[in-house]
Structure formats: C-alpha cells, structure tokens
Figure (tube, rainbow, N blue to C red):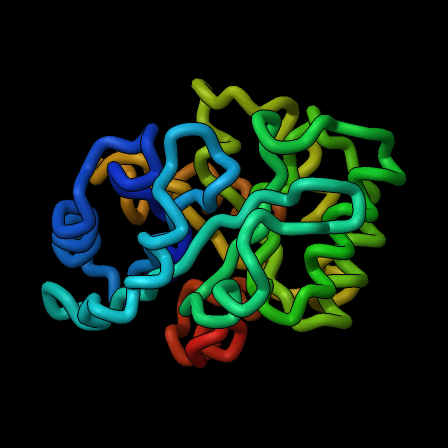
Length: 237
C-alpha cells in the first residue's frame, strides 16, 4: 500500500507531545509524504493549547518543506449527544476535524451510550474523521458507526498507535477487525493515521498496514494513497 499522507499528528502545543510543528513537517517531508495533518487536541484535554491557538491558524502556510500541511483539531467528544469541546463556528474553520473519545474528557458509558456519542459526532457537518474508535474502554456497535460514517461522508480511522505494543488503549486489534469487516461490507472508506506525538512516529503505519494485509482489505477503501480523495472528506477540500 502507498501511504502518502498522515492526517493525525500532534506537536508540543498539545501538551503531551514532544516536537515542534517545523520538526513534524520536516519528518513528514523526509519520509516522502505529500500531505501532513497537524491536529492538536482541543481545549478540554488537560495541558493543551488555548482556543486562541486555533483561531490564529490562518497565519500558517499550507505548504512547508515541499508538502501540503493541513491544520485542524482532534476535538473531544464530551457527552453521549456527541457535543464537542470547540464551538461550531471555529470547527468549521479547521482544515480537518477529528472527533475522538478520551477518558480525561468523557466517562465511558454503555455500548448504546458510547455508540450514540460517536454517531452524533459523525452527524456534525464539521467532523471529517472519527478518531481511534477501537478502544475497548469505550465499547461501541461497529455496524451502527460504519453505517453512520457512510451516510454522513465521514472517514473512520485505523489508528497505528492503537495497535502498538505499548498502547494504553484496550483490545484494539479485535475491535479494528470488526470495524474493518463492516467497512468492507458497507464499502466505507477508512484512513490510516499515525497519531504521532513525536517526529519519529510521523508516517508510522506499520501495525495498521500489517493488519490490512492480513485481512486482505481492499486498497480502494484506504484513502491514504490519494491526496485528492482525502481532500474530498475535509473542510478545506
């Protein structure tokens, strides 16, 4: 598979990542990527940047080190109605929006509650990607989430960090397999992302790619091989 973009990364602005924007972009360029998404954690995540960080993204160049750069956010799903921790008008100004569930920001509920939270976030017109929906600490109904993603033109993320041996997320592999099989059945595209919090992990897709190969997952449903296809799912287009 030809992974030419990575749409989910964090810099020191997120508070628990370890490289600057310039270092992350340079790493992406060095690894031959054509596009990098820098998606800092939104404001409810402990230690992350202020809202002013996101309102001022307009000053940044969208081409750096010879590659395109998309600036956006990984917004936190805050309740079972899919409320996000960034006002709608600002979400709509982001190049790309990932919506994710994180334990510091929401208490895990029942399968029905967690699924509702994800589906309601997917229904938000500013949301482009559902981030790491594979954590067993937030059990969900994958068929319902895949169906919602198809209806609302949202990408589901296969998160490489979730599959790393040192991850704090639980049982990502069986959950990813369940999600991918429904994606195959419903013909719903996915995006493979590194979720890199340091420069050395930018473009790191090895665990996710191994799973896709093992499952013989259709390459036509993986958007990482086309910048043009990816852009159709973003706010910047």
